[in-house]
Image 1 (spheres, rainbow, N blue to C red):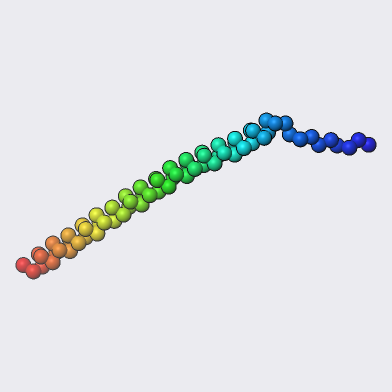
Image 2 (image 1 turned 60 degrees about the horizontal axis):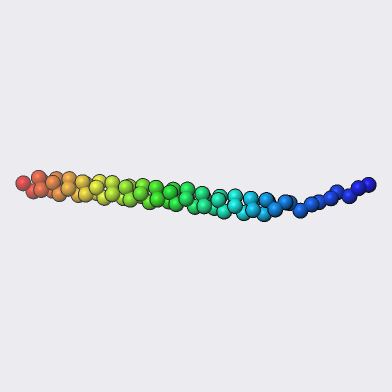
Length: 70
């Protein structure tokens, strides 16, 4: 019987694998940062729309109260 010979990976593995790992981290960071910016912008837009609706309701209530007083 012959024993299975397990050889060390060649030197390109010691360069290729860390480079791919770091590239994945960088790309993931960039995509995640963009998603975070988009989510923050969406939240700000929703908050602005909510404030506009509240201001419009307050204006209608004030107008209704003024017309009821007359």
